[in-house]
Length: 227
Image (cartoon, rainbow, N blue to C red):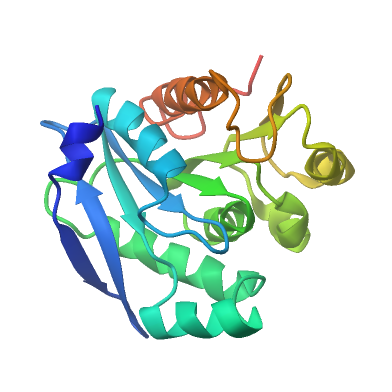
């Protein structure tokens, strides 16, 4: 499955305030688009997110893996940590990526989902609160607590996937679950750590994400709340 992503050349996306490097992969006749928001210290080359993207591509979704920081910003962040918790900035860039995807030929009329990891999940939730084209969100080991103030405005279905051994992040999830303004579901993968490096853990993440997007990006707007 990764072959399709490996063969996809990088593109440069002109946003209103910055240009970001990205990889856009389109299957024939895509059923929807999924934008990935990476966590701090990661990039569009994240092997974990690329694995999930390949599973989604196989299921018929276009996928966009974009760097949320420019090379200069990334270098500065490595030295100072200036941007990694700037959720307002990262969320705005994810929102602008949503705007860009919504104008692309062949994708403009398709529903959009967001897949966020770690701090990128907080950025994805901020974008979901602001951009109606977003129809569903999946968070992998995310930090929804960093977007707590906007969670009441997140009306789309949100799937929160946490490793059972990632106790600090699991606790943070439990503290903010009541703040979500729309349908949401917390799934704990037993024995998995923050990076889901255990055998079979990432495969479970990818399967859960695929099924969530199949459910909500191919259903009428609003979908159905999780069972």
